[in-house]
Amino acid sequence: MLAIFKRDFKAYFTSPIGFLYLGSYILVLNLYFYLANLNAAYPTNSLGSVFSFMLLVMMFLTPILTMRVFSDEYRQKTDQLMLTSPVKLSGIVIGKFLSSLAMFLCLLVLTLLWPATIAIVGQNNMAEVLGNYLGMICIGAAYISMGVFISSLTENQVIAAVGSLGLFVGLYLLELLTVSLSTTLPGWALAALRFVSIFGRYSDISAGLLALDDFVYFLSISAVFLFLTVRVLEKRRWS
Figure 1 (cartoon, rainbow, N blue to C red):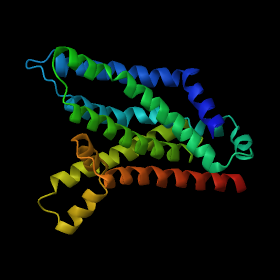
Figure 2: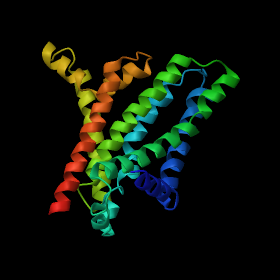
Figure 3: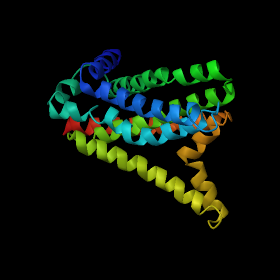
Figure 4: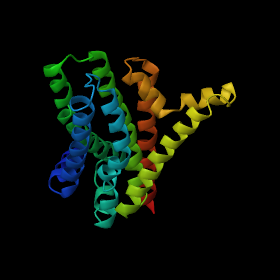
């Protein structure tokens, strides 16, 4: 697993993917941070709107991060070597997942410039900052596990990226639909939708409401999609 992690993490920096991912994120988000917090008519110390925008950007850029995880192995025909190696399939999947998650964490480290800047010109709301970073890690792990699963289904990186994007956008539209119908849905249906709502649970964490069940939920989502990825690889191994 460690060898897979090191190889894939290093590959992000030996190809344009890693630099495109980090560069696109930082360029867009830093511009938004400047406009929303430093150059606004009424400057604010709150980073809530910046993280909310980051959540939207994440839907479009996470597929860039995960589209090549398995698709590239299939395209280069190196998957058979990987599948016949002494490493367990679960180790391969977890290693690749952790390498993508590590790239995402590198991005979060770069965004520490935001609270550092706020600390210079004003005062941070530490509960909000901590909650948003924890929420981002949780939803980032969930998105990456989904993207890894989609990548395991096809050797075409474009299809993998579009498939992941479609899934993320679909979850976001479901959340918007839930909010718009909150006054008309039966109580049991609304409760069920809120229970499975990724964005609802992220909102609770980002607001500083650190409940154990929210963290267990995100851990479960990641585990389910990684398990499904292992099943896909098992099928390819014996096909």
